[in-house]
Length: 273
Image (tube, rainbow, N blue to C red):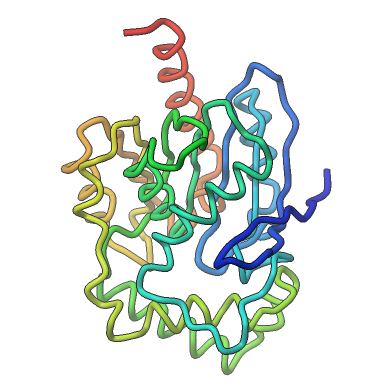
């Protein structure tokens, strides 16, 4: 399987998104993977394929604008504080429409991708012909800005300027500067310090599995515990010996938890209330 490029219209301009479609049973669930702030299709490595095989599922993995092999960010473009809202409410629905997805989807997002998944879930049913949402799995999501997040992102800036981080990211992005500075500049802007999606969470009606490592260097456990307080149907998984990337630090534990979560709720949907 190799990624393709899918044309969508965004900001009244045609852009191309790198997308990988993972084949599986026609009657299996469809998982849509939403990457982290420096992620892409390739940075997921083989986790999406392994998870889809474990679940008997199909998958859709894509790189957001500015990332991977998707259309890069214009050099003069600066992302606004609402950049994750726009990805959830504009780009993701446009991609699903372009691919003709109609069946229910499960969103699986990591870090910024987890926040995007929550924002999409909070507006379920508001995207016209977009497919219904079955549930959301969020790994190390952000629902507010914490000092630990800002410190780690400042450290990433220094690493990008003074180590081989840029060269390593260039393996995964056609334009690593587009990916890095789009993310880093907005997260470290003064205007972003008050960013929060806590108020939106109360509108989520689908089941949520919120996962975080206890050693996460980009956020405290308040990120997922705050989701559970506002979304009663949330299941929490706090993983020991795990940092910001549960799918890399604890892949087997994560896959078992996701398989159980999707299996339980898919069975309930099939049986009805």
